[in-house]
Image (cartoon, rainbow, N blue to C red):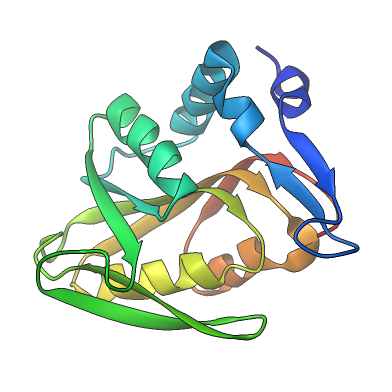
Length: 177
């Protein structure tokens, strides 16, 4: 399946969640077995060295990270919103457009020195991915890179990750917000 065919499987919803926003909805890609498999195959092909873990950020990132971890033969690290994990956690706050949010992971989720690849459905401003990278580094692990189905380059998230030393690659790019 070509990139154009995969791109055609992503639905654009205008004015969601607010006027002027073009929401890039990956759920339509996830519904298409061949398209989703091709997208994960192509993301996996962009990874040079197999990581120990693929970290997925809640919630659609869990889907992408799980499929990518299986394809790469790596474990899966779940990075969740605050209050969702049952064991001892470490947390990282990050800025939202209006306020802050918090990501957490279990303190024993990854060993010091583990090689961790971040994965999510989409990168916009990069706040979530940067917070996830800080969490992984605080645990003593190494962030080897980040993979996304979609990049919204006009919002600068991939550039922010790159500036933080995280090599970033996305399968698809869409202009705008």
